[in-house]
Length: 145
Image (tube, rainbow, N blue to C red):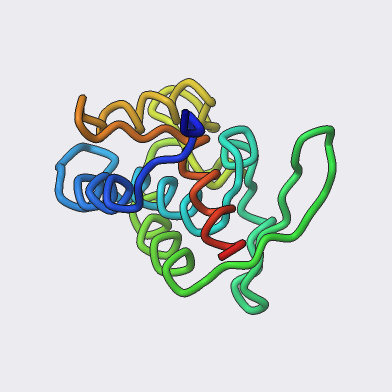
């Protein structure tokens, strides 16, 4: 029996294609969240807690407060930097744009783990279901290889 979090690479790629092509009101934010998670292996909670000041574009890294309030640095690749920058242009126009948090929701100045689940569900189909933990697991496996 396979690991429930291991999803074929083909499924992940199909999922990312849906993220790129399916229209919605918060497209650049959703792309930034999913690609950031896919390219760094950060957890949902960590993604919600990223503050603008935590991002260091010059040194290509983000300070992440992880499980058990552990602090760590996560490196950003070109893809992650590109999607964050694209999102920041749209973010500036949002009503909560004065928030210290990177990812905003319609109702508050900070995204919740439940909203991230909803974003993943929005792009998933019965044949192509991807969740945040599976993406993290895929990143870890890719890094090991």
